Every structure is written in structure tokens, then in C-alpha cells.
Image 1: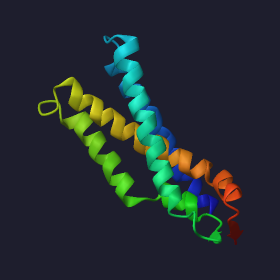
Image 2 (image 1 turned 90 degrees about the vertical axis):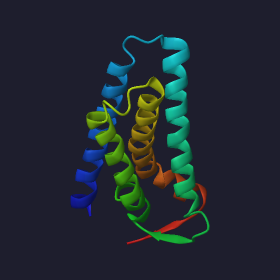
Image 3 (image 1 turned 45 degrees about the horizontal axis):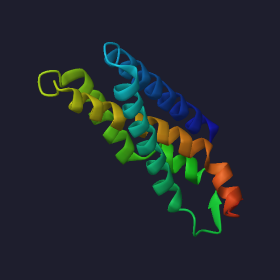
Image 4 (image 1 turned 30 degrees about the horizontal axis):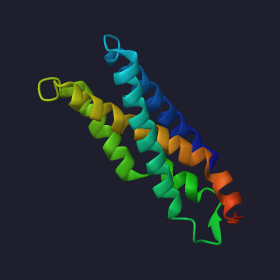
Amino acid sequence: MGLIIVPVVAFWLAALFFTCRAGFYWMMGKAVFPDAALLMLAAFTAALCYVLLGLLKFRARNEVWAFEIPCFFLLNKYASALFACAVVAHFFGGAVFEGDLAKAVILVVAFAVACGNLLGCFGAGAFMKKYNISQTY
């Protein structure tokens, strides 16, 4: 299973790096405190909400397959499609998404999906321990 999980984790790490780099270059001329702090607060809040809502799906279960929660986050087709839409809007939406608000939404969506997928994957063990969910192999 590591042959499937490791490349997908590497992809989401690269996606998170891309999002952070794009956000850094977009925020270069902006004020740090009101603009960047609020944007990153919104992005982290969205990522945590995504992880929380995803993990709540497994809270009532007694046992899960060993890689079920990481696969739920890493191989989620809706999250992948949402990230792909954000990347396409970033690269090809220059004429449509000119305003700061549109660029901020693109950045928040891309960061929330990439960071949320990684947090959900690596936080699955702690979640299962907290709610006494056993793993089956």
C-alpha cells in the first residue's frame, strides 16, 4: 500500500509547496499584518474545517481498514478536482480573476485542500487513538 500512498503524499506536498510559493509571490507587495495574517488565518481555518468534517465521518465506526482514512483524504476525487480548478484559475484565469478577492479565494481553496489532505492523512492515527477505533489489516 505504500506504493500508492507515498507518491500521493509527495504530490500533495508538492501541491502545498506550490500553493505557499504562489501565495508568497502574490503577497509580496501587500501589508503583512492585516492582509497576509487574515488570509493565512482563513486558509488554516478552512483546512482545519475540511479535516474535521472529513474525520467526523469515521467517528462512529469501531474499526477501519489500515489505510482507509489516509486514502479518504489523499485519493478524494472532489478535493483533487477542487485543487485542479484552483490551479487552472491561478494559471489561466488572469483576465477573469484580476481582483485581490478572487486571487485570495483561489489561494485559500488551494491551501485548504492541500494542507487539509496532508493533515487528515497524518492525523488519522491520533484520531483513531482518541476515539478508540481499531485497525484491520
